[in-house]
Image 1 (tube, rainbow, N blue to C red):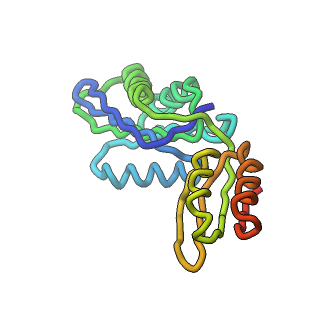
Image 2: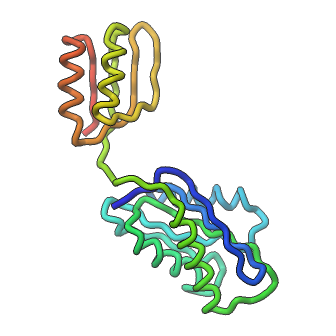
Image 3: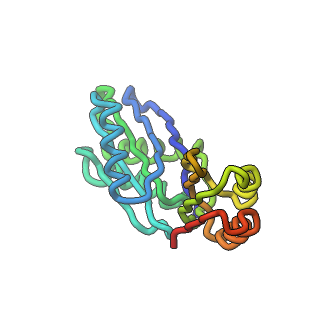
Length: 198
């Protein structure tokens, strides 16, 4: 499975109606809700903000809404496109500004499906890798070597706090946890505290 790495946006026009498809990362149902609310705030004058989402490690949890479009003409076609993409932990919000011409049910299904396809053409993804959070407290003397280790084990650093000791928090691929622990022991000689979530 793939996951989205950043927001992407694409727009199509069908009979003067604008369809803006916005893809966002979402790991939980709450993330999906928050994404939809956020897009509604960005587009307060839109006639509809339809969404389709696929979440979960296996990509088997779904969320969908037609947002006052006729039943199964908006969110469902977008979801079908999304389900076939091999991407999980993603929500696509499709913002519609009505252009004055009714599209009919077939036209709506095609427009919403095509909107989802357009944004999926440009999304950036990466392999879904199980990650663990880590927290490390280390002396300044070990910092340079530990920075090299971060790159070697593909650690993503979230925050660094420079006080009496340096505190680093971030994520690491689960498959690299043992190598990371061993490198910290070798470099720190007992002076580096490392916690990795389970």
